[in-house]
Image 1: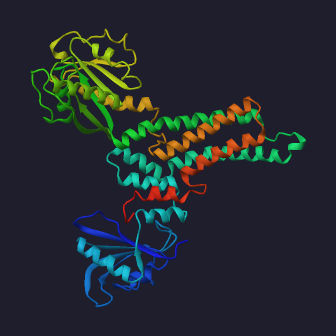
Image 2: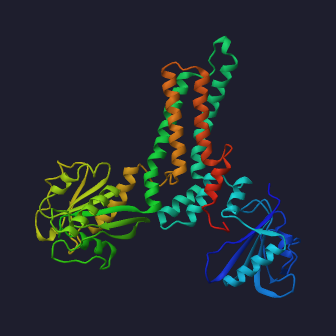
Image 3: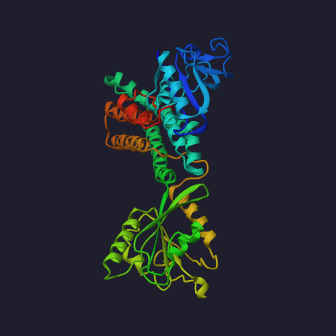
Length: 454
């Protein structure tokens, strides 16, 4: 598909022990051969590594001692001839090698062009290509696992089943249009209705996983709230195992929010210690209280600590809708009463006692944070999880089209209009993996976010 040969540094910017320069294209071997003093790369076997020197082809000046890996098309990442030059990690050396490659017939790759070529050459689909970027930027075990599953075709396999089951019915509906004068039905409407309901359920489940997927990809925001001196800063310090927040018996010590990230069971949680929520005439403290409420609104999980009463929950009732809420009686080492009086009033919340000083139920809190996040999103260890906003939008559009099919069958919509909505469903599902023609602007947006060399 591509006649030109591209090159770029694939390792991160900065000084390191090694740097890798990638060259891909029809003329990758002869281009590198012109500057490589070692084996003739046109004559060596695929997937072999060779020792030699990179030289300036104009002056025979030695630039670096290198190892060159050779990969023959189509069994390469780009499905093209591919060479990887392993050199020393000096930025100067890498720049010189790129310079002589360009002088000898290569050009500098655009951002994401190697992965884009892999997609356009049929080596991977579009969802897998996007997963490459997610894998590179993975910050924790959970986001790494999700990205790796997608790169291996997890979402592709799931969508393939949806798409194939719909194609047959779409074909039958469209076949009816050729016999419109004879008033025949090739597609059993009852079976189509069952299929639509089944597909709706699967798409809705995938959409439900997006919130979880987006959370583990970007970190789950957890707001720690309560009245002054409820133990919020003490809890944050205990979870982080460091003295991050100032702890004092003086009420109102925390005036602003403090954020720190902690990984629990492979998931990153962004804990936010907030100012104590109370009525105050102190202008600075009042600003802190307002910011605390803003963080509650933005959070996915809210941990409310209290000693005497949980009246704050009533005041923040609207903000707490659709959130995972822990209502924890703080400092239970000081009282025999754990307190269950709020379980009836707030049945959707999790209630138990906590003592940071005596290390009571801290492990339980860590465990519950992970489990409730997974449960609320309807995911398990084997779930296909959506993390990409483009995929979410396409699935939502596919769901809307299916709802139009369902409504159309109930209202006796004609076959041509049913076929239109079915084709729209197929189009939206196919746009995720690139099984339809994808607009060049969309490809530019997707691959333009990649680093050069990937």
